[in-house]
Length: 379
Ligand code: NDP
Ligand code: MG
Image (tube, rainbow, N blue to C red; front, side, top):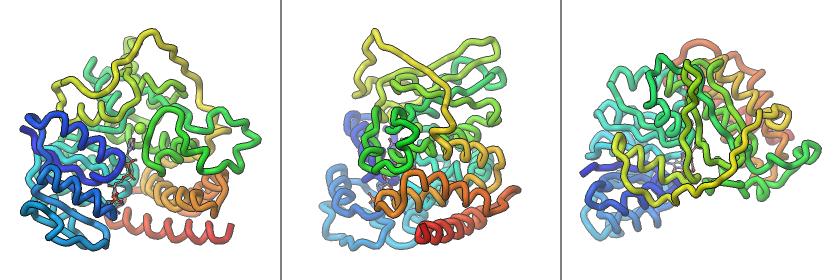
């Protein structure tokens, strides 16, 4: 029986992870969960599975009487760090959005748990630091992000020293077919209609701008220790090939499946074993298409690649700015094209190269968020 902690259980990934666990009560047990604001769903999941450790990170009210069984409840500042320290789990799924779960995840690493990593912000903002800690603690990180799960699976076909290129696929997002002349001012509602995947709101906008793909390239660089020159991105409309690895001999290994996050979630739980999943089998025949990324359509993607290459805290700054810009776009405070324009402003404003520690990451995150808010107000 594998004991599983899911932080961010109320989110899109968290709920799908609960579905995976529910299907195999003889294999998995849910031993720790967290939410930020959604108290109702948190209590519902806790009561349904009698989860021993429950954590609420936001400041909503929660009362012990609401639980139908005796559970250990953690609330307030640092609740997640304490819960991660005290909780009993073999696998720690980080499905929280943002960088707030960085410290609890480091705690879980130190405890020797497998990290099932869905959260991408942690590697984007502090990849060097996180990977150095993972190495120090001999921590096992199994990626959940579909592209990285695919690469992880493809890599098992050869030795890492024989890898030539990682090829990351992108659907191109909701605006991939919109004429360039109309890109300036598209509504968030249109961006939310993602052609292939059903995901959270923020990540769906990040797919439209391909900021998400930029984050994923940075994630891949850290996770697989591959240089940016050896990571390619291609537009693949069908979202059937989730990514590929080309080896030195020219062989390209790809992972294909219906686009459904329950597969990479389950794989991170069962690896190296594979068991039946709720994902629809891929029906043949099917069409596959691949084309180059048009940087004119995705200026933010180019910036993210540059931020990755520059390293240091550049990716952290892009992430912080984007976390302000996407909600501002939802609230119609800014136009679609302002997202990439402001990201560029942030990129040019700071000198962020060089090494850093965790305190620097948090500081630059705060600074950039404030600066971006100010820029948004002036637009
Ligand atoms: P959601 O927004 O759907 O869920 C986020 C979860 O994090 C919720 O449980 C939320 O709690 C919790 N949360 C929000 N803010 C905080 C905070 N400050 N501190 C602690 N917990 C917080 O996100 P997704 O599930 O879509 O994504 C989760 C992560 O996985 C992200 O990093 C995303 O980029 C990545 N990812 C997502 C994919 C997808 O298909 N959705 C695919 C690949 C990667 P509450 O509900 O109570 O507010
Ligand atoms: Mg992805």
